[in-house]
Image (tube, rainbow, N blue to C red; front, side, top):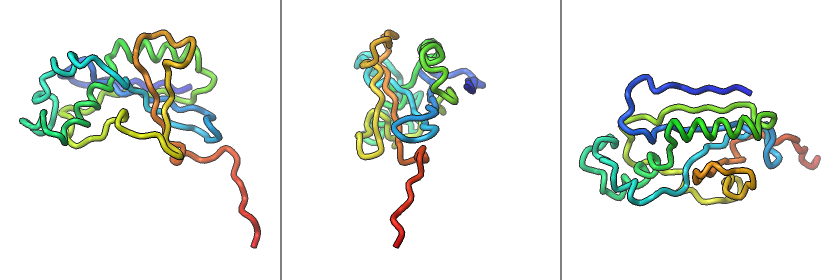
Length: 163
């Protein structure tokens, strides 16, 4: 399993700044499925305590409707300590099922107009891994994993009917 932790390279304006993804070898009939891990809930007081004008690319837009998704992108991110705990959990429980784990800081300032993963809806190929349903997941982090099966090749190619 490849593990790539990309450092910030500069001081980050907030501790909650890390994206984390994993690639599962085989998942729901697909090969090498990339899953983006994120916090799906947070304390409203945490959101109110953040100085959004220092984090968002468009100054004075922090309360605008089009900035809501961008604010959630930050709130979905992990701290370095949370990222490391999730990384250790994945290595302990899923090392033989994963091909890669990647983490990097989200870019600051955060562009306005982004869609957060928690705003996505499940559909035909899009879904979520609900870590709170896994009996041995005890990290006390409200973690979910977003995947889109349509972006990954099937494990078994099916042939169409000949004409």
